[in-house]
Length: 310
Image 1: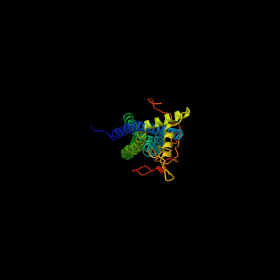
Image 2: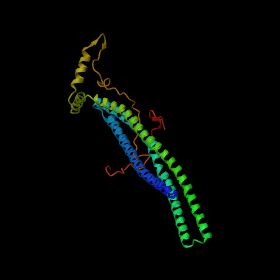
Image 3: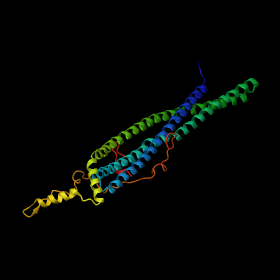
Image 4: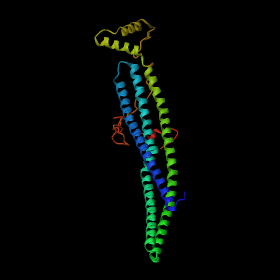
């Protein structure tokens, strides 16, 4: 079916209008979900800081169970490192995923203005055509008014044609950018998650190993010994060691068989005692860390740079 230039321009404008509305809907939802994920990640980071601080404080206060003390200290240090990586994850999600998608609110708004302007130009052309037809039917002999009406129709048709070309160029540019940004943002999201979880596995494995080394029997024996001493019962182990030391004196030298700390060599701390465990009560990026969902309450691309972490 043959269509006039005005009908073609109108169909094109309506197609663009539907396309932009669809993009605005789903990109808006995508931005909202990505922002929610980022805020929840910041919330998990804050809870991870608290967990690391608790492990450190518990380790500092533990003076009986030596192997548990060492295990908690190592856990605190590695948990703190994981939260540093999580902070870098949050910063990358914000800059590489959320921000580029959020720009489409204004982009779609500008495209819709262009579509509206084109539809108005098409309607103006149709109106001028109708006026010309009425004038010809009522006053066929009034050549002056008919000529002026024809000029108005031509001017409206030209405006609609220019607007149509401009809208077409604008939509091609929009589509090109939209395809690139969605692809890049999703690839960045998956890469950020992969890098973080690879690092998290490494340090969670160290936490798991340190807690696996806790010797429950020896710590229990040590507790029982301390409990007996607290009741005033002599420590039979220390008495036995002292007697053995006295009986093994040779040539004026004493070979002491006992050890003041039987756990030191077995559970020597492997990490620095001076690591600072930080606690952030709120997300510096998002403010309050309250959940906004109904179901719940730059960079080197290859590896995180902890110098940028909090």
